[in-house]
Image 1 (cartoon, rainbow, N blue to C red):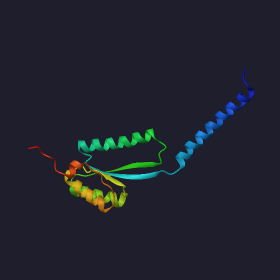
Image 2: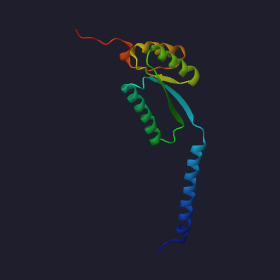
Image 3: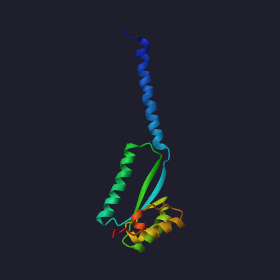
Image 4: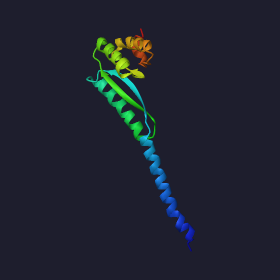
Length: 140
């Protein structure tokens, strides 16, 4: 035997629940998101640079596919660099024009100290691989 009150309120509850979920989803899409620009200086024409760029882009894309409700969005700003001069120009462009919050790279070992120094002067963190900052240890 079914209760008429339950039969009346159950569909009403389901409709209310559905409307609430839909309104929360719409609210999530209408609220502004905080965008954080991250710079990357690599030679994307080289196999290593292309792999690094692809992996970083895929990681960001996969993260937001799994966590679509995050308010902060990372935007990767990649600059192709071939030498120290183009690396310095890319860092200046990323800091002054794009206004990045951090710079990843560079791929060129000799440019790493320059990027770190330029980032420090602009108060932009530049995490780089430690192997670029010091010569490798050689066992005699």
